[in-house]
Image 1 (cartoon, rainbow, N blue to C red):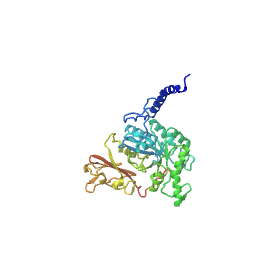
Image 2 (image 1 turned 180 degrees about the horizontal axis):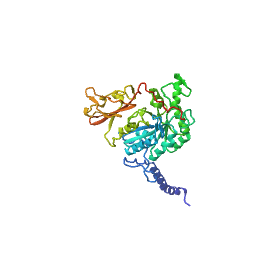
Image 3 (image 1 turned 90 degrees about the vertical axis):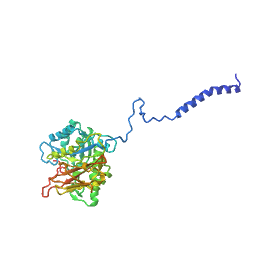
Image 4 (image 1 turned 135 degrees about the horizontal axis):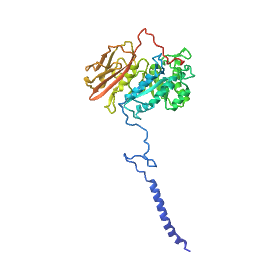
Length: 420
């Protein structure tokens, strides 16, 4: 038996390797993980590349989008302001394909506007307004035939069972079916009223200021909440009934959480277009030229072109102004191009929807381009001005409306009427 003092060196000898090994394990565990180089790709445990984290991407800021709005689809057009035949609609969808114009979904469009996703250089968005049954059983099958995405702008009292939801209205069940198939459903107010006017057409009464604010809240906010709750969706777009709105309506929409506000003043939408006034071309059965004019606006654009500097109409003191309604069918169109910078006078070009390139005059001394329209324009008119500034293309576009002829009976709109 060894004396106690003789055991001490033996225990120390046995313990030293164990302590050293323990210390080494701890040191390895504390060693910082090497930072990957800029060229290294993250990978999963299986060795496959990991999905890239979401964020900004290099989007094509020269891409252009046109948005179309449709209402009813019938074989015999009786109300051309809101109706179109299925045959004409299918021909127009085919024309988009023939022209190489890609049809994209609303959320892809908004992701592009946020700089999160790229889109093709020439695109179209197809929207159906109000919620008519023919959108479900006539037009939707045509959209599926082309594999085109679709957006519905629904006014909630116009759905079957609502105050204005008669036999020609879509049902909540049909909306749910379309939702499940990937159709984007957005808001179009509760009663499809002119939101500028303090009148409740359900209660049939004129509203005082306090009542108007509550009613406007219902039309814009409660409509959104109803769609979200009934369908379990997220609504982030609002189409203004008839295209009538003002600054206050715009502010209420933005405060309600809408990301985009759509009007009916059709014009090409660009990366820098303001989301609070995105124009759509409303297609009518007796005005096929509206569709052809719209696609001609972007049909010549190409991918990978030179960057375009875009300017708003307010920067150009444009007349008639953007969104303005004028009483003369042959107005004088003017714009001050000083905001373009130093431009080549010979490069100034003006296009007018329905007319094409017009012989506009440019005065370098005042930077003003002008054109006196010699023909009678109708409805909504889009103006596009192009010029070269220090070798780069500069562009501006805006839309104004021509007032109906005085004394001509205004056609009653079917969009706010009960669906019988």
